[in-house]
Length: 581
Image 1 (cartoon, rainbow, N blue to C red):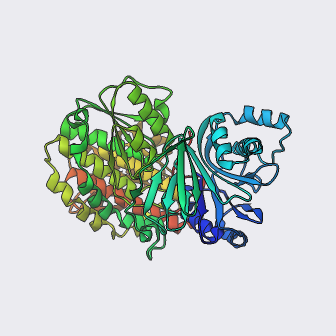
Image 2: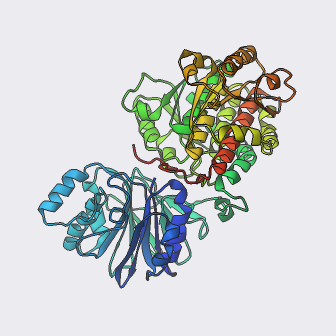
Image 3: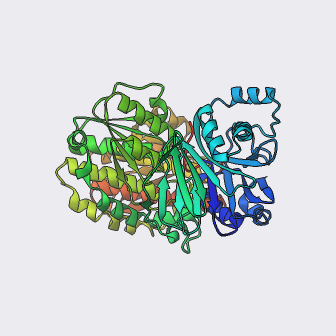
């Protein structure tokens, strides 16, 4: 949600910032803007896509600047509400990611003191507070340091002022990384805009304020100089490009075998705290796709390891916390999901041992949790999670493997090959049934119910077709009323103790006229005869079947969305990293 880029260096700032903002488009946005230090503050900002107005932004002058992609929270998407925001003197410019929770009272006070507001955003209070502080101190670093304590909420701020080549950055509960270059320095929401220029990064802590010049970076905490470690990021610039694929999502689907294999082999369960090595029970906190990964884990860990597991929506946990003890696992692809961070803090307050699973080195969750296991998925640009989801499952399956005495080490080491096998399955017949549908039901049992939920989420996210996942036996408890010849059902029917009852469920759906697309094992002699479209997947271990059916449903959603002409990588109204509640 929102993206920010700042630059202080030896090159023209505007073109570099524009390219950086394009790298952040995956986060979701409805407007953008750039401000540079040229002849004073030079500013361009517009509602809409960067591609429509990039030319005007390239005309800005100066070697220092800030840019922003906005995902609307306070105020509708329009030019006035786009960032950067200026103070009354037009000498200070600010971009902001996050939410200023006390902006209403601050705004009333500022208006009473004569400030003129030009937008409906919460962010604009920041630049007017800076205007007052700068008038007293005549030093933009000190002005930011004095203003930050007045703000309640989450924020990553970048600030520039006319006639001063410094770029000031401040962070509180919102991601902000400093890229250390050669005669140039960067600030951004994540590494994707920076990685082309440097692999050296500093991850600011909550409460840090940094001053960036082309040849130096100074960091302060409570106005006291501090040193933060410089870390090397092993993402390549090419990893953030399409590499010949038509869409980032397709590229990332095809990267899943490698993401699973690399993550699996990077996980060292020996680093887990003692309480996480042999837990008597476990609680998982997550949102969205990460929640579905947690649900798969819950089914598999109870079935295979005999360890009781509960799963909680992180967004609910803050307000309705159940009694928890022992091990709590927080899953967040970005490491910045606000609800998951808050839930983990609450778990720590109850003396639980906390374990984080994330894809981003230096992210907030890694500083909150007692231990962190990092995925090795690389940058994921498409908003819809694909390879990050599979990488989450790699971590969770490796945890289960450790708890079970490495019983499934051989199975997991070859799982990436089965993922590779399903990437080229012909789904054209299934796509033909899905494209005209207004609603689609996904059904499965056990861990495949969780896979159904994720498949339905992918379909609704990128195709905009209403889709719902159900435990197969639940359809007859109400949703049967919605079945018709125009309502496809996608059923996952794998060998095992539920195979027979799934066959019965499918026949019940067919009796109501619904066309059925079924995923089953190669060589199944019964399923192809009772469904409209049969999609065969390799017969393998249950853990691996979860992965292969998941990938098939990702591909089905992708091809359906492309057939409908949707913007697959940037679906409407959605953001990649949900950093606010």
